[in-house]
Image (cartoon, rainbow, N blue to C red; front, side, top):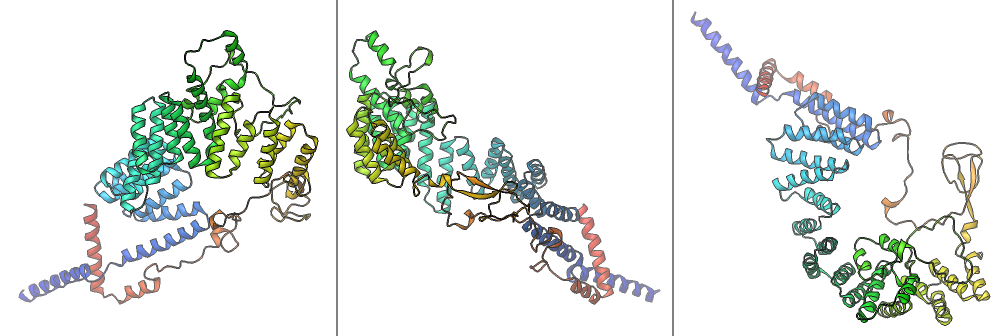
Amino acid sequence: MGAALILMLVGFGALAAGVLIGRYYVPDDRQLRRTARHSKAYMRALSHLIARDHDTVVSELRGVVEENVDDVEPYFALGAMFRSRGEHERAIRVHQALALRERDKRKLKQRAMFELGLDFRAAGMPRRATRAMEQVVLEEPSHEGALRVLAALYEEQARFNEAANLQHRLGKKREEDTSQREHHLLVAAAQSALGRDDLDSAKQQLKAAQKLDESAHFYAAAAELAAARGNHRGAKERLKQALVADPALVPHLLPGLIAAEEGIEKSANPGRTRDELEEEERRSKPMAAVDPALVASLEGDQKQLALSAAVPPPAGGETALASTSAATPVRVTTPPQGLPLVPDAKPGASVADRVLSLLGEVEAETGPRLELALIRAQLAPPDDAAQQVALAKELATRFPDAIAARVATARLAIEGGDQAAIKTALEVFVADQGSLAWAIRGRWQCDHCGNRPGPFSWRCGSCRRWASLRMETGIEPPPIASRERRAAVRTPRPEGLLGMSPDESLPSATLDSGLSDDEMTSAGVRRSVLGKVGGWFSGVWRRDRSRA
């Protein structure tokens, strides 16, 4: 009896020792095997992703998810894959489930909410995206990605003050200079306040923006504020400062400058008696009024400035069209694309003279600019032949290679009626080395796939069709290619990485996925029977613990 009891105690002791050794000494190889399989699945998914076989990537990630539901990384990868494919609803469901499932884990919940905000933004739901990012920033104020996305969302929703505050926080966090972006956001906030007729708030925003910088954007907004208060001279000075800061903005600022000059002219004689005949004559001239179609074409930050001094159009909304020459105008069946540099309803002679004088002052400070010269040429009075000849010579001398300058010179020549000047202007365009000589040149193009092989061939090298090349004429010369590599056009490759289908051309994994199959097999052989028994008990205990 005593010997049997001793044997039982020894057996139980050995069993306990085996359990302890299996638990704390001998590792459980099932987790290693699972990790190795997952690593291989990740590498296969990465290879398929490189080969742009997205369906196989989703299948691989689903296999990993089904085998180990506790690992959240495959879920995040699967959600990001759905978002990149445009399947926003599936991505939202995945990340919503992660946010609810990992609510007790702060970091994982924040990550899920951030990904959910990206899903909402990609799906075109900016309000939900904003709420998700605000929740992430509320729980972790230093989350750089959420701050950056939230600032962009605020900017897209015209919440410029909040966007400026977030840009300031990002600049302090990354030790970068974000003053330029903050400056423009504050100016945009001032323009938004002007649109709401909140002049005091606009003034405060402009003062805050002025502390950071003084740009053409700031001067233009200050001109809007001055015009809204009825200070047309102040608006004119601010617009001049904006033109000096950035002369390329003259087509955008010209309507406001004309409105300011008209406001100054109108306020010069406030007590003048209105004459009905004079009023009717003035209404019949399109240069004395701002066309409502022109005002509607302006951007929101210039509407109030253009309307502040506009003379009402005639009854019925009709305006007479003034011809710039005695010749019959050429009718264009297709309207030209782009915006006109000068409004269709040109200002009066006195206003045009003052605008030309101001543009001359700006050009004296900034140097010759093509935009200023073109606008001066279009604002020049048609009956002043000497001024037109001088402007034509200036355009031809200063900007000989600009097509816009040659068009303006040709128009001046046509208005002047000089046949020799008209012939010279025409030869500049249509000569063998003229600006439009490329219009009568062509290139071969496949009418099926659009490929342009260069020299003629009976067979298209892209779609492999015979007798499909046609001459394409009237094509503008290609622009100069960018030096940046990402701007270069890449040839699409429907084949796999090795020239075959993606499923058959995947390379083997190049990263160490853990223990190999031989190492795992040898590791299992080297383990003793006691170690295997202990590992089995340890695995059962861990499974019961995870279920509990």
